[in-house]
Amino acid sequence: ASAKKSGDVSALQIGVKYKPESCSISAHKGDRVKVHYRGTLTDGTVFDSSFERGDPIEFELGTGQVIKGWDQGILGMCIGEKRKLKIPSKLGYGDQGSPPTIPGGATLIFDTELVAVNGEPSSKSEEDDADL
Image: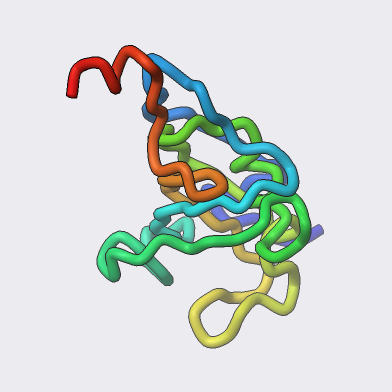
């Protein structure tokens, strides 16, 4: 039996913090997505954040370019949606971690915001265009 730290999770947990009223574009497997994120350990230590850099990460969803918790946790997000992902180590960096910032076996917490899908920055409908 391994001693579990408080805050550790054994399965991916997805908390929707904000969802836009209209969701004309959502993230599907194979889409190129841009995501702003802040990654913390369960003790609150921030190990990486794109918000401060003003530079969201861009990757192809569902193809293993990022940790599994992201490939699963970003699926179905709308542009502008914000989610908190609690990712168990088996869907993160596993027993080896990602030295020096992420210890082995670490549960990861990511505050994420989907900013673009396939180059589309936000949902634009015909009604919006008429207002210009």
